[in-house]
Image 1 (cartoon, helix red, strand yellow):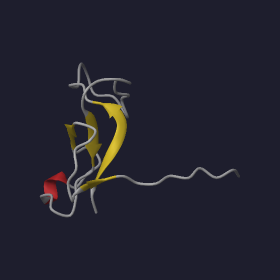
Image 2 (cartoon, one colour):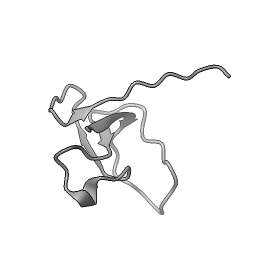
Image 3 (cartoon, one colour):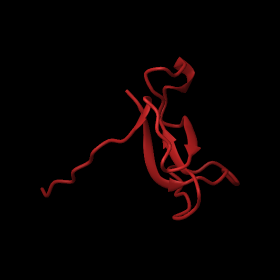
Image 4 (cartoon, helix red, strand yellow):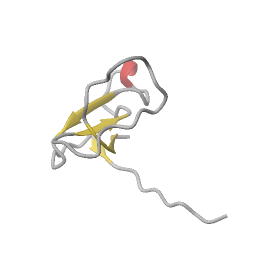
Length: 71
């Protein structure tokens, strides 16, 4: 299990809580979420997030492949 890279770029949260807030579409650092095989139990949640340069590489950060199928 690895942290999952997200499409959004990093921006500090502002204002009150929102469900699935959209991040900026450009910037320097991208968000990754979810925890990994070496995370502490408290960080194994979808709201756990961090950020780094898009070319950052680590054995606990990756991506998931998604295929939308026609119904």
